[in-house]
Length: 68
Image (tube, rainbow, N blue to C red; front, side, top):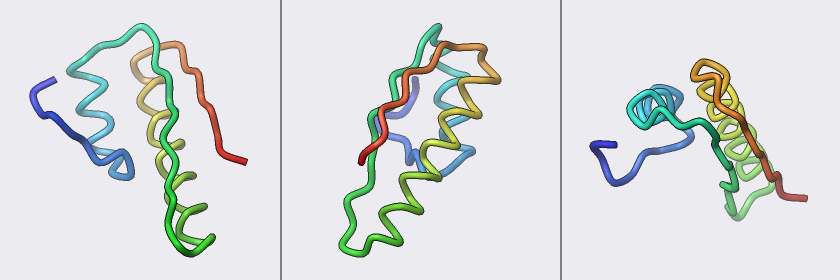
């Protein structure tokens, strides 16, 4: 990958990172820990959806650990 960090909430950045890395498997452990439950839930869901989309386009195996 060319950059050190990517914003997993941003679909374009996730797609770029996965396309550049071309992984055979992705382990997604990211979770948002904001003060309000709404924004934490929204960001965690957005991050997960972006990773699922990128993994499916790359045909990579995906392990997704979601917070409780």
